[in-house]
Length: 238
Image 1 (cartoon, rainbow, N blue to C red):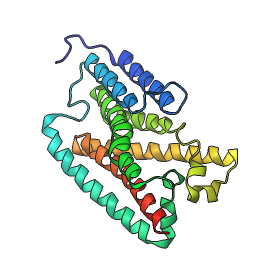
Image 2: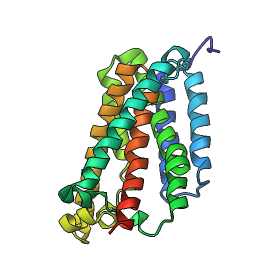
Image 3: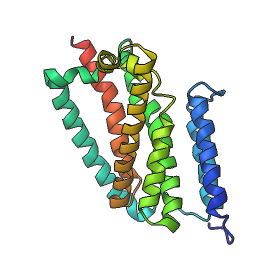
């Protein structure tokens, strides 16, 4: 149901950003956290803001007529990532890239929990709905394609500032390059922000080409969840 008099995007978009800032601070220990419920609350609030702006399911990439096409895209992308990860894990000179201290002491059940609960619910659905769904969709209504892609991708990069602060020490391949110094941590963090912003551009393009949020959801889940699986398997085979 649309509002007869939707609120201006000048009010709604800053509200969307405010919600994301609060969630980001909570998820990274700067504010009290509700765990996985952070994502649920954020998605509900963002959905209310979309409705407040007069938006619909089509605006966020979840229109009924696009779901099948999006599912096809998602399936294909998951298969491609799985193939690339398998090849990378088998080749000696790329195998170390999958090493991650965060998976070193996990059990198989804990890895499965991350792959099928924590990653899809706590990371992928929230981030895709927020950045490629709500932000991209609402801005595109009045500013074409390039503006929503740019804004969404830049904010997606900044979203990763806090979670990437310890990246250089969690990934052995990066530790060898950046070491344990504060300068190395800052450089690694900047690199992570730039990389995720570039990934945001790719996710937006998948959303545009498929006209469905399911396509970037599929790629995002595959890169994160299958990365955990590859790191876990390789750690057990050494």
